[in-house]
Amino acid sequence: MYILGDIGNTETKIWFVSNKNKIIKKINFPSKEITNNKLSTLLKKNNFKFKYIEKILFCSVVPQTFYLIKKFLSKKTNKNCYEVKNLNLKSLIKVKVDYKQVGSDRITNAISLMNGRNNYIILDFGTATTFDVIIKKTYFGGIIAPGVKLSLNSLSDRATLIPKIDLKKISKVIGNNTISAVRSGFFWGYAGLIDNIINLIKKETRKTFKVIITGGFSDLFKNSIKTKVSQNQDITIKGLIKISRLIK
Image (cartoon, rainbow, N blue to C red; front, side):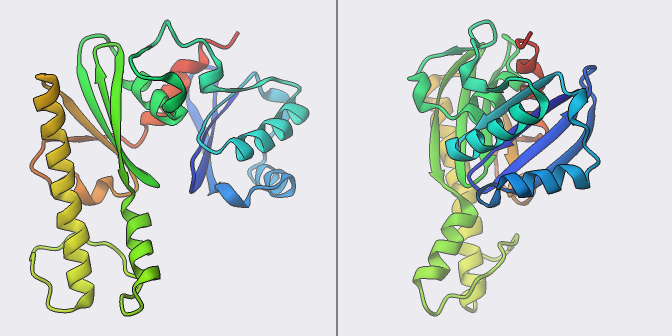
């Protein structure tokens, strides 16, 4: 069995995967709340058996959390705990930009889709809203915009009269109260941002793309923008499974 994980700024996801690439279980927890005791309790709660582990691989954008998890799992399993960008990925992907500047989650997502034939734009609604451009087998570069939830929370934190709200699909553009005005601004504002950036990528590269969306707000926007998109919430785990084959 393999332990494969994605450590994000907000949330950490861990999948337990069979050596035949079947997902057995998935657990999620806040990234910044992790301690050895919490990890131990969490794994015991899920009836986890360390002795069956063959490979451990993570993509991570939070080095201190990865280090803690790595130390814990390596000690418990007596196996090396790898981070995606510490592996030699040249057989899977070419990176046109400075490799150190690209998050390992974004590299993992790119490898997940890469087939050498199609061009992709991956739109990930995470802590940041990211666009990654893949042309054939090359990671071409990307765009980082403010995350939807982060921006929404920041506005309510800074503006005394704006309450905490949940973002919802809204049909009218002009709001008739504070909440509907904020919802409209964020919903239609991000819809416009998404379409505009995708169109600019197409114009700059002079290429056509398949657009894949993933992450927390992909449900909200998948049918609310002009661009034709496909939703894929399993993109990261599929990339990790693909990369894990490099570990002997």
